[in-house]
Image 1 (cartoon, rainbow, N blue to C red):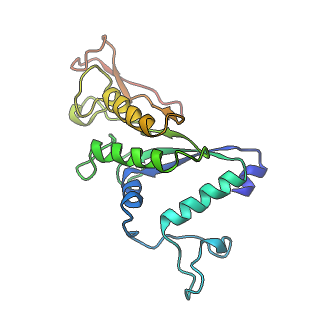
Image 2: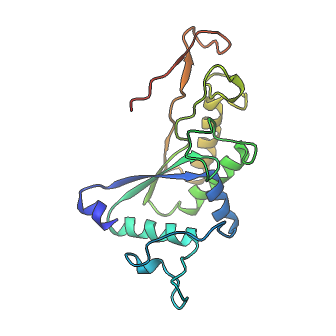
Image 3: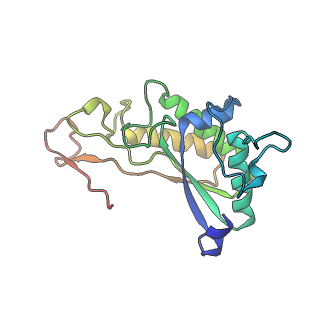
Length: 199
């Protein structure tokens, strides 16, 4: 983190999952021992434990937040996926059969409340690239006036209001959907086009 700061960067976007936030919120054990380079970062070892076993992942995260604070770096977390095992692109939406929209909202609320007095946490990106294509309409992120489960507009507005109730000083980022209807806001139209991500 010091090297990042020394290169003039002052802002980090860090991918997270709903799953790990809920794990931290509930103080659940790590499913596997966190992997860290304890030679380069001895602070991340448990002292007195043979072999230098790593700390709990939430302790590691909070150490990183502390280092960011000390080096003048602000953080935006990005909910990249519902489940930790996903890179975020295999699963279109902010929920799965294991983690619901309500789980996602609760995780975000907890995170916002936990860091409400620490402006090192500057922003939350509610979900990285909600996507999905028109050939699978039930698992395609859409943007309209409904309260359908896959309506990103409704989900983002709901989550943002709940997060801001916990910490009104956070910046909330809402990314666009992968597809949009060419004809007005008719999501049942066959004329649904792909948004082009600027890669």
